[in-house]
Image (cartoon, rainbow, N blue to C red; front, side):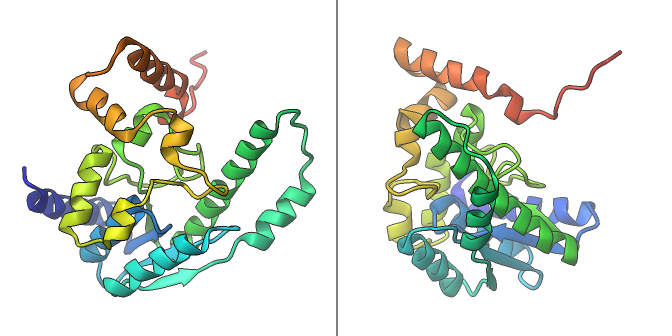
Length: 242
């Protein structure tokens, strides 16, 4: 299947899933990154009259906001902006910090941002009877690189069977601005944060393993360990059978 065929199939898949659920349209968080940009364009083509993107800055970088607005402008995607700085600060003030490790505290705060964004998207979706569409790809989902009940809290994941390389190819086909395709992938959760820095490996290395099983022993063990440790994030909570 070439990239054009893939784009068409994804657009139809999005439309079919939303209508089958009895919903009227879709809402998408646009972060200024590649995945959310590709997803926003696909969703707009699936529902040109009943889709909008939500920009949810939360002490975010100026560049991410500029990139998100650039995508919305280029493809005429309607957007709403909800600034979450104050809500985030208020929650941090109300919550105790029991961490003795600064990196643990930083991760907890980063996950709080992702969960605030999930709440915001579902607020709009509930009001409009829309579906929340997530931008997670296979590379991230496989190793649990997402926040449980945060960016993982969505209704459908159109890019969930595509590795990062395939999302890049879609981005080029859809004419996503080149600076977005080329910039280091980042969730933008803190200053200088990058996906590959957190993962401890490159997307190319991860994609090669997921597609062809190719990796040296050390890398293979690392990836398989990440997959096993994040298994709980990919399935509903277990239910006692007695």
